[in-house]
Length: 333
Image (cartoon, rainbow, N blue to C red):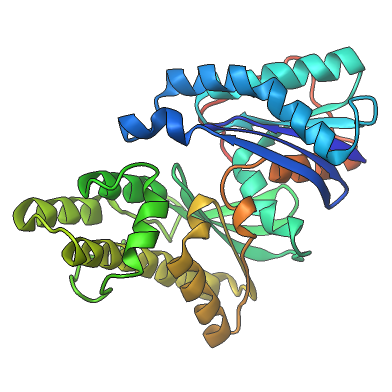
């Protein structure tokens, strides 16, 4: 089945064409230049940029795939979670195409797209443990089948990617923060500053493996305010902060893996592109007998290939959505 996927949940406008598991085209239009001067995403500007970009991005994806809308057999579109204005742009266009071409339409949870993204590069059999870590989400899921995902833990405050962005702003490094901190940290000493690691006790909810990054972010802010680091000292702050985040992510994930008896581990989402996290996950997998699967960098950040794949799986099972399908900013997985 040839599926057109459309993704516009945040600040990247993306379209992809898939034939089964084969990615025929994947196009992403970034808004980094739009939001850079604000140090973060401005929702209204994001929505307007999606409106301008969505049709050209879809056209480029179809051209690269060597197909036309007449060849497309189904439409998959992100319906949440995300910025509601951004989501509605992609959903409206997807509905219009599906209605006019009389094509089946299916809405996809953005988090499920990330959760399944390693399948684009290599078939990963269920069950597997997923560390889903991005600018808006930091969660652990036990995935036992398509559509069967148990949340084992999530952040109680900031997402890891959000913490990266905020610390980059504290250091005056610009936006997006994850990439610039990763680059700066390569020249810094990871053990130079012992920033705190939050290790949470299970709460009243069934989630036993929650995260917290707000205390770490505050500790970095206090250190920078007092020390005013620059040059090598700023690189040490970046490296020490990054190491603290990775420590919390890896330690909590390994604890969850032991509890559920996982033999396979997937790390997905934008922060999965972080070089230190990838290094530590692969090392931990080798040490503890976990088969670690990380998507290629192009499928870590928001993209429509993962949406097309997740939607394609559902379309193949005969699932369809009605024209009343709507976007939801806080859609749960």
